[in-house]
Length: 388
Image (cartoon, rainbow, N blue to C red; front, side, top):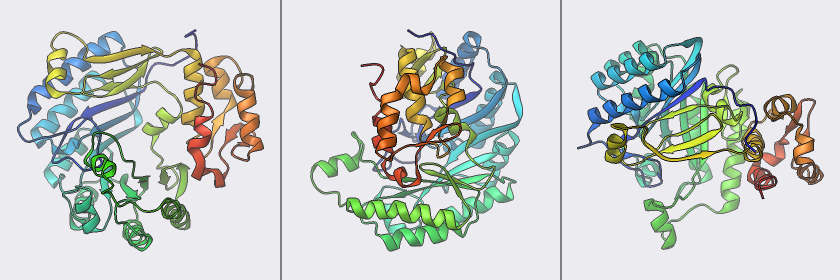
């Protein structure tokens, strides 16, 4: 059964799969930009935009997120063209649109930032990862801490007032004092938002190869847990609200685009390797640059397109929604699926509450603070409950 309510997408994700180098932990769809047919890729992306909006015309767009790769490896003329065609095919913007672009320190200069600002970008997410140059080198990053300071200064001078950085913990060779030093330096920047992720060793990465050979010296599990506790404590002390497991914001600066995913809302997904969710279907695009370009010459560049059954969508709603610290709302669930969370997941909810891994709220359910550390246990409890 696929009958449930999924409103038309008001969020747009666009993938730029080029970067200056490949980091040791990265399994994203990304390719070193040198020698790549970037202009041909933009041609193909424009064709995908044109076909997509002809099949699913855009309503008012509330959020746009440009990820990668490193979108800011585009030259200023390429960036200008990319932003212009994005506006052409998705012209109806909310007055308070959130338009985010990912960037790496050292890949943004005043000219490029001016083009971004003129093209509508109003939020920049920098992949910083650490303020320890030794750790940065060890994970394959080519920037150093001075690049971070310079890039953020350029962005502020260009008029950007909504800036966020990504940091990582659990890195090879990382200690608690090293993380504390990175947090000191990150918080001294007085930014609006911080995303902080634990390292995951993914297949098809250099780190996975080293891990399989017992050559990747990672912090002990308890040390990594203490790192996360330190992060939560320090960010809270500085006035940041942990609104999602890995994300911390000053009031009003939460990522509205990512909240679309966590609320199980529909979104367009464009570009090589991009995922999209609309019309009760999820799709994934072809990953290779040349296969993507060629596919766009004759149709949509789909690798897979799968219908999302009502039961699967209900499970997704719970799993991703509980990542938000405010939790899931019964009213939202009933609006989308025509039933209550208790009717769908009664035994699961009761068990999680009995195990003190879930709290009932006036509006629905949420993780208690102590269970944030064990979120994956909670999320996993919903997998296959309805679709088995």
